[in-house]
Length: 75
Image (cartoon, rainbow, N blue to C red):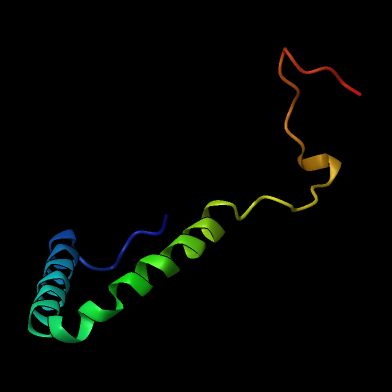
């Protein structure tokens, strides 16, 4: 991972500020956000499934195969 050009405390302050602004906006605009919560939960399922199974179904070449474990036999 690449080292940031900013001091660590600056990054923490930016995260804290962003979190505070996000909570403020959520509290102030709850009436506008609350009708979409079921839709967001529904959309979170396929999105998380997509990112959790991103390597499934890809064809790997023989160079990238993992070594066989003790219980597995070559074909």
